[in-house]
Amino acid sequence: MTQPARFRLSIKGPPIHLESLLFGHGWIFLAPHRASENRDTLERPLTLASGNRVDLRVSYASQVNVQGTSARPLSSADRSEVRRACRTMLRLDEDLSEFHRLCAGDPVLRKVARRSCGRLLRSPTVFEDVVKTICTTNCSWGNTKLMVTRLCELGDGHFPSPEALAECTARQLKLLRAGYRAAYLAEFAQRVASGTLDPESWRADPGGENTLAEIRSIKGVGNYAAGHILMLLGRYDTIPLDSESRTWIRKTYFRGRKASDKQLLARYEPHGRWKFLAYKFDRIARRENYIN
DNA sequence: TTCCAGGGGTAGA
DNA sequence: TCTACCCATGGA
Image 1 (cartoon, chains in turn brown, orange, purple):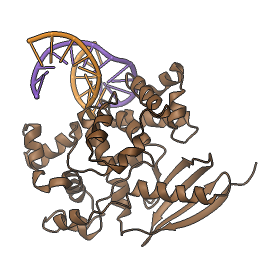
Image 2: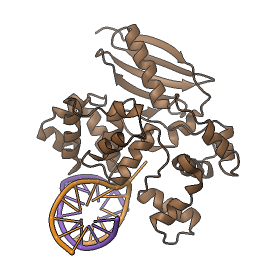
Image 3: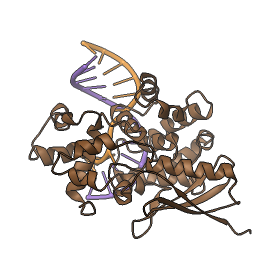
Image 4: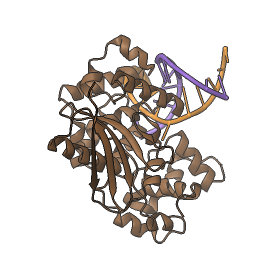
């Protein structure tokens, strides 16, 4: 048994607020993501294109610091891929300056801008984010966590590749206990593995008609899931309403009374293409004392 | 047992 | 575009 190699690297980027980035969204609670006990480090395993398997620990102190172990010493291509994955997960390449200017005039959101909040954790690949999104539909959050944990068990602790998921037998899919979603996950994985669908290509044009059409072509992805995937791609002009967000907006702005989706969404209409971030951080800022 | 959970597909109007 | 009905699973 060889000792794992250790590595360390830092990543330049805009100022971020790591705690709200990690805990503002439920993704940190879905395997193989996890947080350190004191909530200041993102941890997850990652299989690189070279086949090298790494365990990452990502923290922040004026810059993003990555410490990790790898099965083999990192090649320069491996290092580049680790950097790219971290930039993607933390959304370091998104320009939020317009959102922050918008926040400055809002009594609740003001501190969100002051503390450089606005980024939300996502997965290193669009494939992983789509699979996880399908696992959130029509079930409790607890069930979602179970399904995703079982998916990672298929990948020996790592999130399975499209190829690995596409090759799953019916018996293995049954073990996911994903119900009717299992067939949707298998079909999506097969389309990606065969090259007929390239989710990574959506990053280049998250607002494009072709992107939206391809997202909507995935079985198991309806209105809510499509909006959620667009949000993960960095497009915030729609708020994907689910039972959870409906309940919160109704409670906060309608005194718990019944309201149509149109009425709920109207609350954030003035925020233009930043509607989702405005909703999300309105909610986070009201609830969490780590933004002050 | 029934109902609901961070909904979606399909058929029919 | 809207509605009714069905869909697997886990927890309350």
